[in-house]
Length: 268
Length: 169
Ligand code: SF4
Image 1 (cartoon, rainbow over the protein chains, first blue to last red):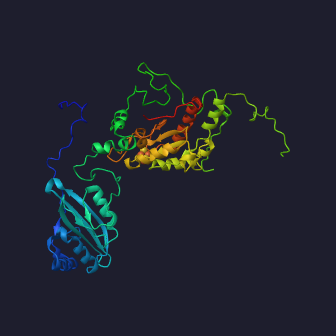
Image 2: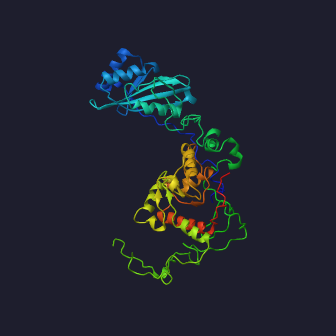
Image 3: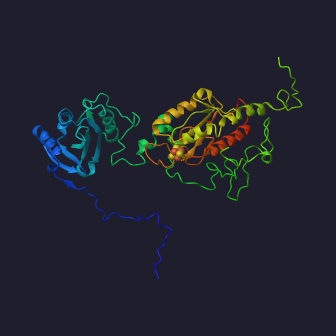
């Protein structure tokens, strides 16, 4: 016989540990395999320092110094025909390396190639804006600032884009709690009613599935409605579902179910 | 001048009916609930469907208005973000008394599946709610039933001017 394991608290225990989990690595190949990329890399190397370069999933990845970012993107736009900046954002590696990784995803329509330019900056550093080269960088850089707190120099309108202007904290950082810090949890109460209302309104209920069967202040059972605050621990009366009061409504004809007609042909 | 004669007493017509002021006022209020268009997310689609021809809200006297000053019912249909909380309060304050609020869908009731930093965990943290409508998203029939329940609630209330406006705090 199998040993009995109690199953009543199965949700409380983690049922999965990542002890043997290894992050999957996408294979990297050498840049010399692709003639177009090799030529592009040579052009970049001629003017700027390249820390690392490889091909991953048919895209070249070039790692550069953060100070060169404007120059490299300008070179790629004007000379190497990478005429579209499709994506720009940051990745939070603060816990591991104390740095943000900034990446620029670029597309060349004429060469039909994509290149990703990467650079790393530490938390206190800022980066040069590429908004002068690509208008699409405008909102992307604002979003990067909003979500990660990466400050961008020479940006025409460096302001939060998604979160409210008076928000504190950067929500996409790994250290930001999913359900918000204290500022986030009380944000709407503080702003609308003031801090002194916190006691009256109370903390957020973060368990939306919580239903107390006997709590008639907050919940009502359909077909068993009672006045608010009634004690129903001894059971509650049945109140049949009705669309109008049972004795009819003043000046309104009562709906008579007997007289109604059910249409069987819905497409009539 | 109309040529025909209407026997109001016989045909159950309007002009002569003995009742209380409360009843007349509440009859008027409950059967002309003009709702503020307040679709915030996917629930808003169901709210629009309720207003469109198949479900036809107009026959209950519920007509959507685009201005809070012409509305007395706010159907909060969708996810209320923290950024927007201040504006929902402002719009609610702009509605004239008496006013009612239906919180439509899980998101408006409790924050629903968006248990995150950016979502208000229930609109009742910001404005007083009369009726919570469960579902994700509730079907138009459910919204209609909610409006009918709200009508019943309004008919039970006193229509007096001394009636206190609802306050959250
Ligand atoms: S309750 Fe469901 S349908 Fe309604 S807004 Fe939320 S997620 Fe959308």
